[in-house]
Amino acid sequence: MEPHLSVRDLRIRYGHREVLHGVSLDIPRHGIYGIIGPAGSAKSSFLTCLNRTLALTPGASMTGTVTLDGVPTPSLDVSELRRRVAMVLPLPVGLPMSIYDNVAFAPRMVGLTRRADLDVLVERCLRQAALWDEVKDRLDQLGTRLSGGQQQRLTLARALSTEPEVLCLDEFSIAIDPVTTMRIEAVLVELKAKMTVVMVTNLLAQARRIADRTAFFLQGELVEEGPTEALFSAPRDPRTHDYVTGKFG
Image 1 (cartoon, helix red, strand yellow):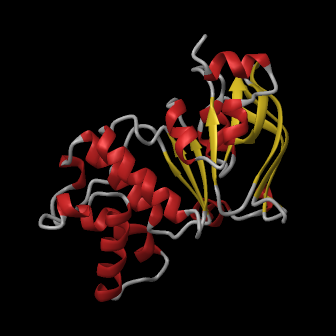
Image 2 (cartoon, rainbow, N blue to C red; image 1 turned 90 degrees about the vertical axis):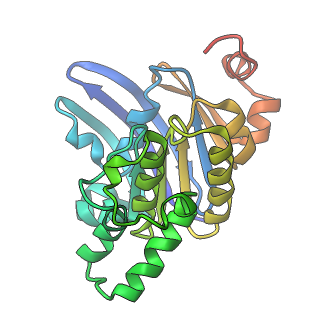
Image 3 (cartoon, rainbow, N blue to C red; image 1 turned 180 degrees about the horizontal axis):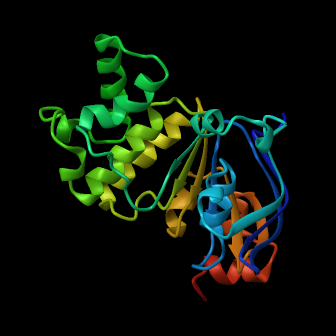
């Protein structure tokens, strides 16, 4: 089966400094693809290339190719690309509007205006983000008044509202308690039947629990990638072994 996303010889520079060095990999459709590695390995930078949000960073540039369903992403309308490939960043980005309107914003922009339909969509996305039970009685409250962890889950709900084909998560659990993290992980395992999930995580146990395939980045290099359990239990590269067994990182 053709990979959902394909990356070839991807290089990223910030000014004259190259931070990602010729990475090539394929991300299969309908699975969870984990990306692990110590800080400074350009994992997050790699993620922003998948929907061209790297272009929003001053001084950043990339070479190489990224294709979505075999189509080079630069040939796609950027708004359409970012609808199809949604991004959830490590720190929440709440819109200055109600909880309800945060989730309904993007669907309204593309023409979904019937209140009953929006109600169903908002509830579904908030449930998927493990937030519904906490906010269902105050949907008219400003989203920016939620706690940090709740705002992070609201950002996830907003990303899901566009029904993306690919959901990119950059350390989504950094501000979320362990119990809620496990609930969202369970949702991600369910969602992979409908979409592809690409997940940068610094939690090795998280990658091992839910990722179908995992890539190990080190200092801007793709060291190794493959089925998750094989990468953790029988890595081919000694650097991978040292990282997943806690000798550095």
